[in-house]
Length: 263
Image (cartoon, rainbow, N blue to C red; front, side, top):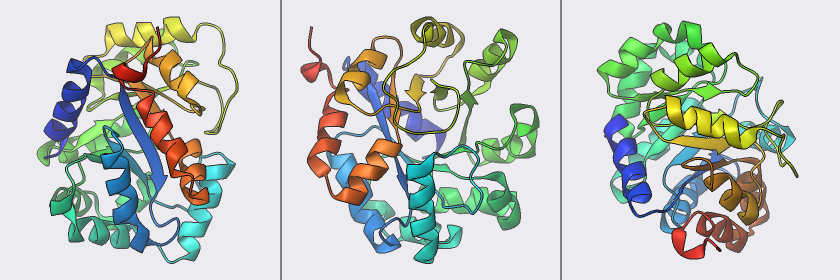
């Protein structure tokens, strides 16, 4: 469980020559009763890990699609406790690792150690905390280590190289490489220098490097896979799930597989 489960999931994919695919979904968008079916659908479709967002009243990194999903989720009564209880109810039915994306205030209010213990009980394997500065991760890192939860860091192309190197060496599970400046959302093009930035992260990081923010098409999944270990797809997955366009989600995931990569 925990960090080791994430590590083995990535190893299984990368050893086959495939790229990792991590879809992000908003817990409770459509009601918490949908969560089990949504995650099992993504697992069956070939996702490597699921990143599960916890709705929060004041998200800092989310673009409009994910903000709207969060508002829908909050309106349906989703709480952190409710999400954890839902995951607990059917933990025996899934094998895919679960990474929670949540803001520090929710963890702090819950009680950091109580939260970490509950995560392991319900089958959560890692955490992304976008508003916790790298310099302050000691607030949670020792406790997460105790419970073998991966603390996954984001790194941005705007960061100084010394900071990028530090973050890349300290992240666990995978390194979340932000590919654009700004919030999440679909992008039509990436800035020059992205390939060299991702390859630099690969040199520094001992865990897989995944590119996120703005990934929205099978072509982009394949293109970014040339430079790193896989992709994280958020806004596009949230939008497609909301619209019920499941085949498009399958096509995005399939683009990360070796058999579908076009020469």
